[in-house]
Amino acid sequence: MSSQTTTYGNLIRVGSCGAPEVLRRVPLGANTSSGGIDEPTLQDLLFRFPQTLPIAEIDPSYSGAVPVCKELVLPAGYADALYINQLGRITLAEFKLWRNPQARREVIGQILDYAKDLASWNYEDLQRQVSLALGETGNALYDLVRAHHPDIGEAEFVDNVTRNLRRGEFLLLIIGDGIQEGAASIVDFVQRYSGLHFNLGLVEAALYRDAADSLMVQPRILARTEIVQRFVIETDGAVAQDVRSVDADARQEPHSQDDTGTLRFWSAVVRDFSFQDNTVSVPNPKADWMLAVPVRRDGTGGLGLNFYGHLNDRKNEFDCYLVPDRKNERAKRIFEGLVPEVPNLDWANDEQPERWESANGQPRLGFRTEKNLAFLLFSEEQTAYIESVEWMRQHLDKLVSTLNPLIQRCLEDDQPD
Image (cartoon, rainbow, N blue to C red; front, side):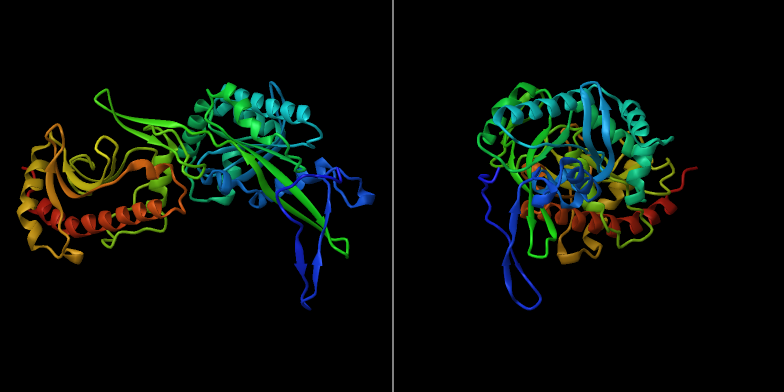
């Protein structure tokens, strides 16, 4: 293995005195006398420190992975390591030496079989096997994630994990020693498993020793599936738009209403967010095209008047608005009474909301703009994603914080008999 092929050069370490040192590359699997470490040691190290794995570079929606257990028992065998994040996104990892193309092909087939097994489970199945692996009782899976994210809700977490299991949405990592001849052929190989919405990444665990014999481990991406997927958005049964990913960063999730791509977006919108009108509570994000902000004290338990942030997939439109319940006469009356008062209110940047009607005649008052919803498939670091989050935060706050005080006065003046 001394003739390893790698796309990276050796590391240079510069000491505190400024003296450079080229670090010595050590093959994974080399005996300890040669400075190497074995697979179990590497597995334990990267299990304990998942933040060192290049997960975000493969798919940002799996970032923040929490180590759950090792040697998870599945019908097809024992998965080396299981991780999960606060969005219920599951990562499976296998730690293997890539001694020859056949071994590489076998381990890929093995982890794909594990993914198929997971996709046949429900939350209770996964929780049971995690508890067995950890020797614990209760909802051990949720408890592990809550220890890192105290504000996470159990019901929402369970729903997200259940959805990802049902859809077969996983990140599969194979972590080895960097022998990469033929690694690109994995894309063709995994096409046989296209019924699962997984990402597959090959991660090189590069080991280095310095003159003092200290060990450095650098996990880095060797190869990953870059499957171009076609996302179809339909309007009344007709194809309205064809959205195609242009690179691996733009390829995220299938564009469907129960997709956690919408949850990821709304989570970004409400993260560290508060309304200027502090009487209005920030809602919890959900995997939905809409984020609802009920008007309090509307006399109907929050069902008469609602503010919404909305990702309009039918019109490629981005909007936020106030809408009344069409069956609630009082809510409709108050809504129509607000419209002529809009020009008299103090709107930031002199940008006023407009009134329009939905396709079925539902009146709306708010802000809207054309927006290609392909940004939902992007990394959160991309400009289009950042701008979309900021637009929604600014306009939803402006609409809610400006209109809500007037709505509350109208509700007081229009008390039901």
